[in-house]
Image 1 (tube, rainbow, N blue to C red):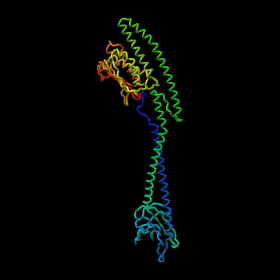
Image 2 (tube, one colour):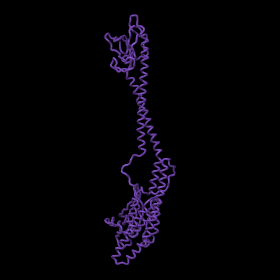
Image 3 (cartoon, rainbow, N blue to C red):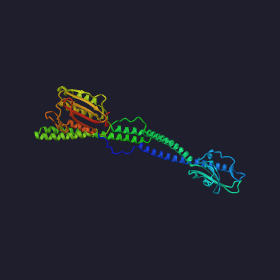
Image 4 (cartoon, rainbow, N blue to C red):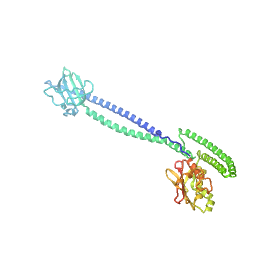
Length: 453
């Protein structure tokens, strides 16, 4: 039975496609969530800084007063000590126009020359370059305090780096947490998809078992999406069974109807002169060979095969050949384990092994052995004898129909060729070699995926 053709390339599995979509979706959703969270936190921090600086600016305005000598001073220092720390970049400044009247200790004492101005944006929070060359964020407001008829500018600022550090730490935490969450989501999605697609694996195994001849239906309830397909396959399976049974019946009827005319023709040929008789017999052999080949294909088509015990087939054939072996004083040693089995048509296996054993009985001197070998690639049945063997240059030719190495031996030279054709119908092969007993080794190979259990 030939295996279905397989395309060189295959599309990705459903699980792979779903997993790729899950990864893309999780990556996009987590990326969007990360951007949104970071931007919301940035807005929150910016608003918090605006509120804090605005409050400190109002406090600065409230504690500013003029002394009796006309100088501007603070009744009390601002609560945040960073304004008093030198070079902290936390700064405030009070000026009249371009003249600095008072500034925080962080900017240093007022120099005789014109000090640098703290040019914070007026009214609203913004970023700017500070007097010491650092990037600051702050704001300023021009007001007319109660102690001065002139309007004064109050400016306050803090370093941008501190805000950036807070945002960076938050960004790192968000990325790590969301990455872990994303990996967990993908793993969960993979687990759910794999669990959800498990019935497809069971369904595939069931269809493969049908192809190999198993009739057992899985003891499982198909999901609603798969159940209609399973029902259609079961209906198709029954339809194919009926067609195959009908074809086999018709083939058997044909063989039976042709058998009698062929026998009559052979008898007529026997009565003809030798040359004409040989020609008639050759044509009869060709008809029988073609008939046998096509009948073998019919028997091997379809499905419905069961496991056939190789050991039992060998035992039955041994009984059938018992008289022949007694006449020729042959012994047959079987090393086939009881567990060795093939999923195939039982009649085919009897014909395959029977023809090989029949050939061995014709040529063996005293001993025939039967064994099996099995690996991941193939299941092999080995038949050996201690006969004269076959010359290496004739190993191929004896597999041709009608080829006989010794015309004195009975038969038509069809046995091994029939075996080869039957085995090839199961995608197997027939190999000939030298036996350890000194005679011919016949190795019948079946692919392990066809069915050897």
